[in-house]
Image (tube, rainbow, N blue to C red; front, side, top):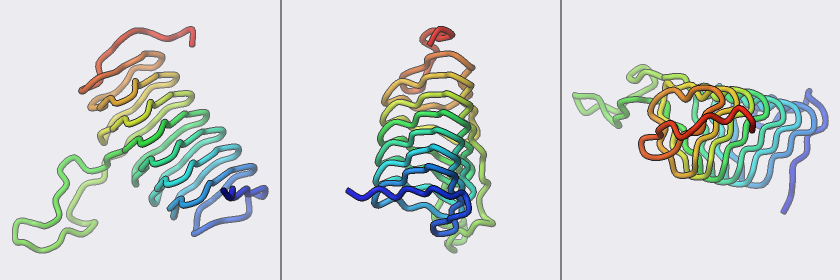
Length: 165
């Protein structure tokens, strides 16, 4: 397996701003986004335009990070995590014409510093996952997650505080 290691913050890949010591594994589709110093992106990940990934993050394989997502520093994203950026997605308008970017509303999602997102989590648009929060594998996040808490389930619900972790 090849690893793309970018040692200079001046280098770019498909108009991707890449910091120092970033590792991007094979078969990543990234465009018009930024990945900061020391972060790692696993294989078969898509990172869409406008996404910001902070320093020292780990993005595991098969994850989908859509436009409108901000991932702060030291965040862990497990395997097969999916972000959603449109609350009411449609292929066409009422008249049957294909929708364009003008026909839907982008809703922003923020993952705060040191949060941890378990494998196969789906995060709906417009939420903030608080600093140091943990989301259990397989959860569906439909609303904000408080800092330093653990949530899990569908929909994700409070499990306990995790200030010690």
